[in-house]
Image (cartoon, rainbow, N blue to C red):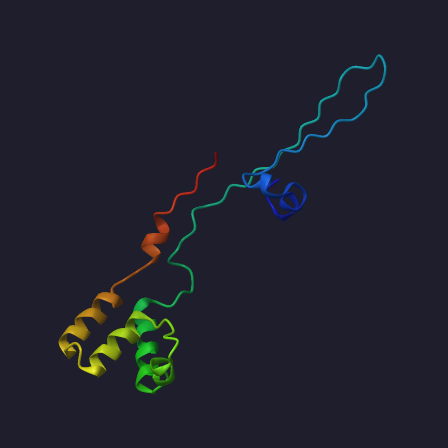
Length: 128
């Protein structure tokens, strides 16, 4: 078992799964009986590119639209300094004159070419 039921019964000890063995009383002068039940699930490697995930470029277009629509003005001036996306940070630096328009476009192009799905494909899960 490796699910919420195992965790609710055995707690932290069920982190890598649980094998449950139950014993039953035998009868005098009868042969021993063994019963074994198992289940195995085998699935295909997921296609990470099939997921309906917004691409980096599309996400950046939304961020730029919101920035140009003054959505981030309040967050920029917030004294708690909330975390802003890298796109917004680049646009703020460009707006403040800290970087040139060419540098900002270069950084935005680098971000647009980022594809985190390649990173997800390299994760391997092993059973010990």
